[in-house]
Image (cartoon, rainbow, N blue to C red; front, side, top):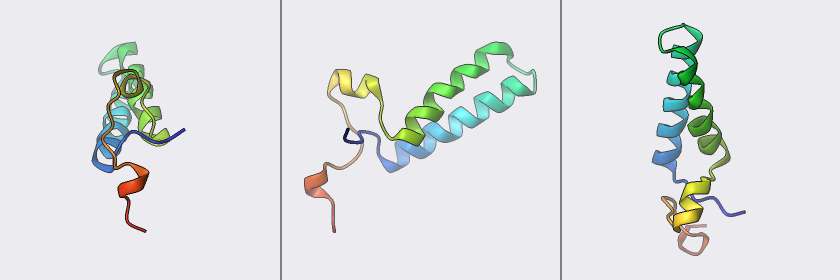
Length: 67
C-alpha cells in the first residue's frame, strides 16, 4: 500500500489526534475526543482511506521522490 498522506498533512493529523485524545482524557470534551484516534492512526500509518476513495494524495508519488 502506497502512502497518500504527505509530511505536513501527517504532522497536522498526529497533532490534532493527540490534542483531541488529551482533551478527552482531561474530561474537557467528553467521549467525542476519542475520535482523535482516526487522525492519529491515519497520520502514523500515512494512509487515509478517504483520500483513496476520492483519489487524492498530499504526498509525492514514488516516481517524483528524490533518491
